[in-house]
Image (cartoon, one colour):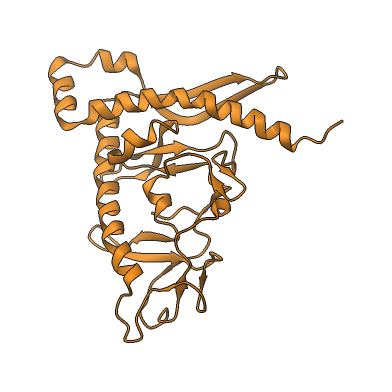
Length: 251
């Protein structure tokens, strides 16, 4: 999954073209993500994500049948190009979402059955002089690429499974536009919108057999984790105020 605010120059790996390419891993300077205000999260990581980030839903293009594709994301900032979880070089939370953890690697889907492994060649840790080689001199996968390939394959499978969760919520018509209003210390109002949340009233009105199915498939548990995560919006407001104060010159 490629994000233009993170992957500046995603390039499909080729054993000939990138025979000498090396990466300085692991990533320790997270300023590369300082303009990333949200990131896709897989259903399998909701339990970890909900402790640190608000989880909301967004429309992410179209499904093959023409319906809206719905994707869950972790929110990192309250305004465009703001990541409140990056302070200097440091990632501020204990958990890093799986797609971000794969950086500088990412996946470009070719079709329903095929995808290409890419690397952000604009990353300062990519060069031909320092780091771990991606390929051997014979053109075989190096140790780093051997380690990352199954991780990316598993992640891509989780991304596709997570699409089904969004599709189910859309079918049940339980999603609604989200609006979060906060009053800043100076009295100004700040509004966050453009996201979708699961409507609690609509969920309670679902027939018992539907709720039972959601429980068996794990979707109901994911919805509850989504609701729990929304308490982290207050943290973002506090951090936003903190950063704004630090960036405002003293009178």
